[in-house]
Length: 118
Image (cartoon, helix red, strand yellow):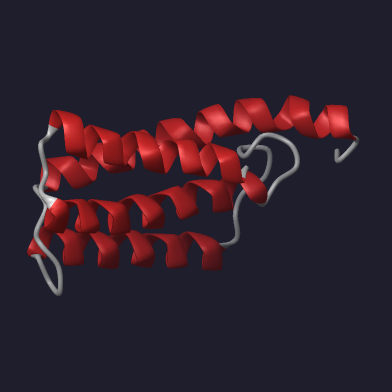
């Protein structure tokens, strides 16, 4: 799970460096957003041994996730205590985190089954 999140973070930051040509300050903001969103993705994949959609998350988890995403996005887009990022970049990172969660989940289930963690 950790290797998957590392790959996600490195991929998003590499996109910021090589495709978007962000400077160090914008990359720091992008790293913050990437870590927040990557942690949300792994939280939802780790909470269930089966596929992440096999059971409904608790209301507390949903509410805290929404609050986390809103706070981090507002800080990043608004440039509060950090260099601002375009809203489209934050939204794109959110979309990438959703895809990451689904891919990680597809890998997790057979690996857990093979290791006898089911």
